[in-house]
Length: 235
Image: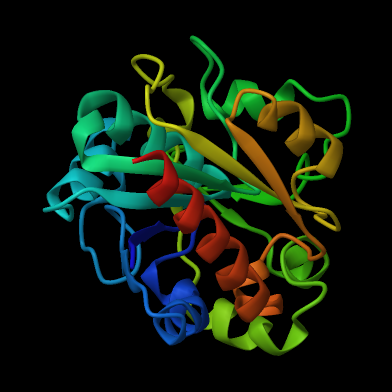
């Protein structure tokens, strides 16, 4: 079976993948998640985080080639990792994630679409070096179809360093890629996801909001299992 490495999005950590890891293991796969610098249990100071330090953490966690899954903001660090060491990445999976455009930062990608559901969703730190989701918008933007996850997320969400989001990736990856579009997403418009997915090898839809790992972990695991089977066929 396949080895999955799961990379979280803005303000999240390895904690958000708990249900999906169990669902993937039930299908016979190996699944792991890491905390990017400044997230979860990682104690890196917010000012020290860069897009390359995110990629460093991903690459350090890979011994043999993996299916690399990035959620939301995580599309940028998984791409940077695949650009730097393509031999470590069997397949890229963008889970309602930003697919980096040439020369564009995540901030620029977010602003590139006419519809802006996250325009007022963040608060900035006093020194402008980090940002966080506004508490009163969590359920509506991120967890509208999994309200039971809100308290768990609220206890674990953290500040997101701003510098990685202002940095473009350093090239275009050669790894095959699949986009999983969340058709009821209230954070990244599904139409924008469909547009970004055009740059991938394939696209699969799942009928959830922005957090399918909470809303439908079994259904998400089935889609990842499908991707794994395709990746093996292409090997």
